[in-house]
Amino acid sequence: MAKQGEIDYLKNIGDAGVRHAINKPFSDPDCDRFLIEFGLVLSLLPPPPARLLDLGCGTGWTSVLFARRGYDVVGVDISSDMIEHAGRNPDARGLANLRFQVSDYEDLRFAEEFDCAVFFDALHHAVDEKLAVERTYAALKPGGACVASEPGKGHQDAESSREAVKKWNVTEKDMHPDKIIALARAAGFREFKVYPHLFDMSQVVAQSFDSNAVPAFDPAEKPSLKARVKERLVPLPKESPALRRMRYSETISALVYMLASVGNTGVVRMIK
Image (tube, rainbow, N blue to C red; front, side, top):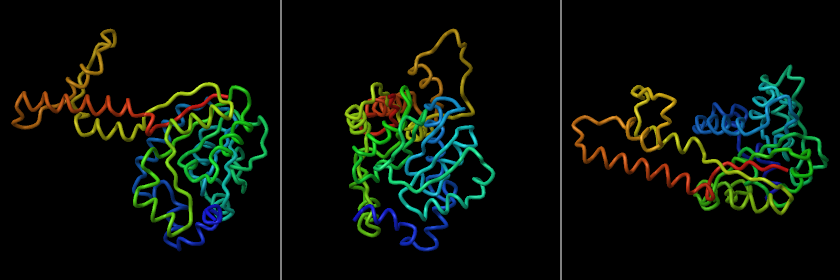
């Protein structure tokens, strides 16, 4: 059963896997992605002080950061092993505004207790994602916000996902914004906004911009996105004007495509 695979995950992945899990995000090759996405999630939450429910918190690194930001945090995970390691995290010690508990987020019993809730790379592991979203809705106060940062379309068919399912008996699903919003609307959420994954956008920018050569714009001029891209696209050595125009066009196209594809992958903010 997939839930049992999630519960036993740390028992099954070996000592090296456990060390990786308890030292996230810094132990992970995607550390930069995690931290950039965490910053985006943080920016979409109501400011502290506020009560925050961290759903599927794993070994607790996101919960610790939320608590250090000033939120009153409850981190929940279905795995008692994960919660045990979360409680041992030296960064969590001394944080009176942080507690962890073993709980299946599909079986939460909170009722209008939280100002905000977060699925950070966690909802795609749900066996019954509809129930998980419904329970989260019930846990939020009226007007409360839920933010979900999840992998988009194609995740469940990725080689790494198929291997994890086969090897560890865990759940790996596509969890794109269109799907999340449909679940949230059925649960009763009333407002929705979708934001592109900032890490993905940063990669497009990094390929084309030289951060040391950003021109100074007069704020009153409010230059367009096209104008800023065109000015910041630094010429390559011996680059012809035609090639520079092509790079400019490709950069604009990539950014526009990314913004237009947020239904396939992105961060969702929902309001109760």
